[in-house]
Amino acid sequence: MKIAIVIDTVIPVFAYGGTERVMWYLGQALHDMGHQVVFVAPKGSSCDFAQMVHINPALPVAQQIPADVDVVHFNNERIGDDFPKPYIVTWHGNFLQGELPLNSLFVSRNHAERHGSNQYVYNGMNWDDYASVDLHAPRTHFHFLGQAAWRQKNVRGAIDVVNRINKMSDSPTKLRIMGGHRLNLKHGIKFHWSRHADFMGMVGGQQKFDVLQRSRGFIFPVRWDEPFGIAITESLYFGSPVFATPYGSLPELVVPEVGYLCSSVQEMAEHIVRHAAYSPHACHEYARDVHNARVMAEAYLAKYEQVLNGETLNQKPPRSLQSDSKKLQWT
Image (cartoon, one colour):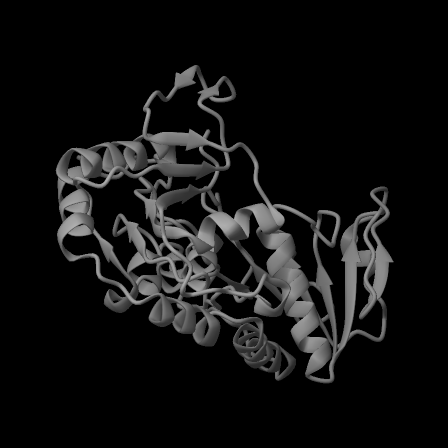
C-alpha cells in the first residue's frame, strides 16, 4: 500500500512535538511493515525512509498529493468529503468547531465520543528512539511535563500536591517542572512560588529522560478533557506512575496498576504518601506493549482498509458535543 501522510509542520522534530512525532513514528512503522510512505510536509522537512513532497503554500494541499498514492492520511485538516482519493483525518486537539469530515477519527475513545464518533486510534511511540531505561535507578522527585503556561494543564495544582506531600511526609521531595518557567507572561501574569518546585523550562532529549527515569510519579491534575497525552505514556515508559485527574482520556490510559485518578489535592497527596507502591516494571511494560508505534500502525491500517473498500468511518459528520473550554473540578 502507498500511503501519503500530510502534516503542516516541519519533520522530523528534534525536541518537542506531539502530532509531528506521532506521525513520524507512524510512517516509520508502516515502512518497516513493507508499505510505501510519502510525507507531504512544509519546506525544510526531510526523511530517509520515505518519499518527501514539500508543500507549496500557494496551492491547495489536496492538489499536491502524488497520483499513485492509495490512501491519504490528513491531520487536523478540514478536507471535503468530495476529495477524490480514499482518505482519513486524525484530529489531535480540543476546541474543534463545526462539522468535521466523515472520515474523521480521534486519539482516544473519550475524544471520539465528545465529537459524536466511535472512531479512534491511540497514539504510539517508537520506544527505540528513547534512551535505555534503568528501572532500578533511585527515584528522588516527582515531575510535571506539559505546557505549564496553559491553565488547563494546572501546574499550580501539581505544586499544591507536592507541597501537601511534604507536609505529610518526613522525607522532603521536589517537583521537577518541564515545560514552563516560574514567571510566565504568555497567558496573563502567573508566578508560581514554592521551595518544593524546580522550573526547568523547555527540556528535551537526554535531560528529559533523566528526569523521568528518576521520578517517583507524574503529577498531572489537568482541568480539561485531555485528548490523549503523550507525556503520560512517556512517563510510564520510564517506570513512573501517573497521578492525575479523571478527565478526558485519562481513565482509558491510566489503569489501576500504573496510577491513580482523583480530583482533590488532599486525596492525591494522601494516596501518594500512603498507598503509592507502584512497580516501575509494570509501568514500563504497559507503555512498551500497549502504546507503541507498531500497535498504532496496525490500527491505522485497519482504518485505511475501510476507506479503500468504499466505507466511511462515520455515518454522519462528527462535531463537538460540548464546550471544551470549561474548567473541570479540582479542589
